[in-house]
Length: 88
Image (cartoon, rainbow, N blue to C red; front, side, top):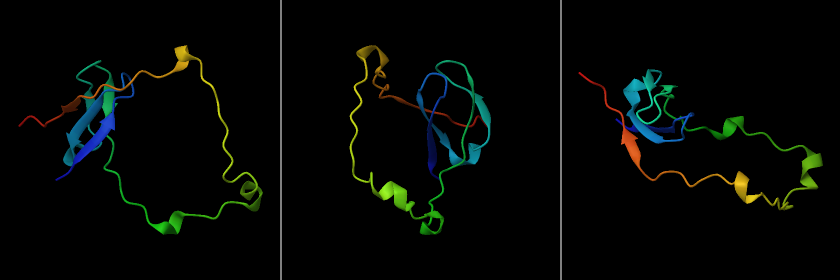
């Protein structure tokens, strides 16, 4: 059984939960916000991939640099991971 790794939408805390808890609503252990544990990620096949329209080929490979003011930069995420376990 693999763990589901996700971030709290309220505080950004990285969380792990057993895959059998997918869809269960919990309270974030850090901020207390209600969070629904997402479904495990499913590998996608190449069938859903479509070709880009020809108009996008002209800008393909172009790089645009955007300078962001320091006050808008995101803080570094916390390195810790909190494991959520089902209470029996």
